[in-house]
Length: 252
Image (cartoon, rainbow, N blue to C red; front, side):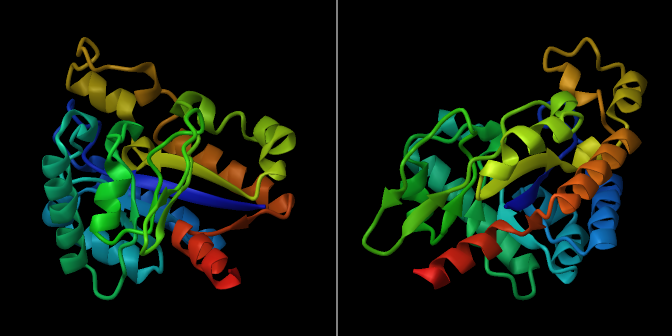
């Protein structure tokens, strides 16, 4: 069994905060934890982060992790036209490629895990090789083209409060039966969102959700560390999505 740890690198709680504490502080914590185990992760980055926090892209790349795209400014792509969506993703990819030294950008994840129906066609046109936008609750077939197929990796669609504390149960019951399990997190989960929202008086905000403050900060890092330890004890291997798809292609 292989496990892909994936992270959305974006503003702190898009549409609520316009800050980058999750990038400046949370990302560093995540990278340090992965360094401790020599694990490589996949980081889906918005164009805004690449533009305003270019050091983050450089740091992720320098440590050997995979960099992928996550839209320009966390737009709701399912509300846009084909042309609008394609332009946004194209700009996102170009910004990130410009900030990278040598990484090939082949992966994409739609914000909110809500891709438009025509997303695979957009990704094909722009040269992507895989998508990780459709949760485990929704299954689709590969989008076939005469050039290649867009492979779909389904991330677990569960809230932060449930994602890691149930790791033992998940590993025992069904993770070990799968060839690959994709877990997804956000850089801002590694900071104390509860304190941040209290300080900014955001609990009355209409976009508030309980999963945005339970099990974040140090608790997130501790539980992620426990999960990694248990997965390793069960002989699980960690990989990036690019590594997984590259190996699959080589076996064809």
